[in-house]
Amino acid sequence: MKKLFLTVATLAALGTPGHAADMAVKAPPPAASPAYSWTGFYVGGNVGYGWQDPTVTFTPNDVNANSSTCTGAAFGGICPPAAAFNIAGALGGLQGGYNLQINQNWLLGIETDFDWSRIRGAGASNFAFTFFLGPPGVPANFQASQNVDWFGTVRGRLGFLPSNNLLIYTTGGFAYGLVKENVALNTLTGLSTATGGFSFNCSTGFGCFVGSSSRIDMGWTLGAGGEYALWNNTSVRLEYLYVNLGRGDAVNVVAQATQFGPPTTPSSFTATYSTLNFHVVRAGLNSRF
Image 1 (tube, rainbow, N blue to C red):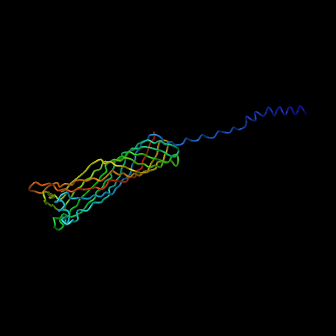
Image 2: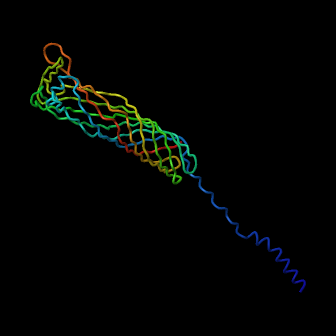
Image 3: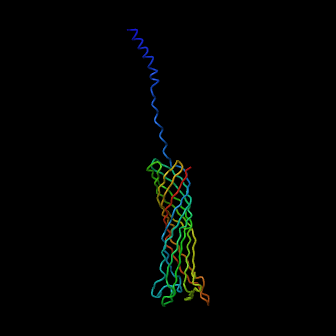
């Protein structure tokens, strides 16, 4: 029995290492995928739409223009009414910037963009030429237009990250743009008159007073948006901007021909545009590097 016991114990001892070697080894846990990082430079493109509702008022600059367009001018009568209209259109361009992700939830950035624009429109002010202390005269109108040919911004961004690949941000900064305006006074019938050393001669009927302006305006912008990371270096965005390019412009609308006879000063009007502030909604695609 003692020999049998020793034999069994020896076999058991010899079998233990082999059994331990056959035991399954537990696999290590999979490595966690790295969190998406927004830090870095990026460039991209955008397309969108802009709109605004400007108003233009018309003020005679001399006694002749005043007495010819203001019914009952000597008694503080009614002058040409304001023209209110809508400007709107498509836009598109490029943007680029830099993001610095501070921590898991917050981001700071700076961005600049430039968009070509077809934000434009025109309106009319209908009235009647009249003579000093006389009844209303011939039908006439002011035609006024406004175009935003291009604009750009330089903005800071403050972003919040509710998840690794979703960015919600506010943005604001400097804005600038090329604005063009045109004004013409047209009549359905030719009209000539001279008063107090000022005159005009609308013998052609159309475009007898003309004025225009082309300028680069500067102001500010404020907005908000959201951006979603599709892959490690590509994201899509949707944003809204309010763009204010400063106070409105004053366009001098001058008679193109004067009364026949002794030399006189051409009559004129001032067309005053309201503050140029327009709204922009645009979508974009960014590539990070």
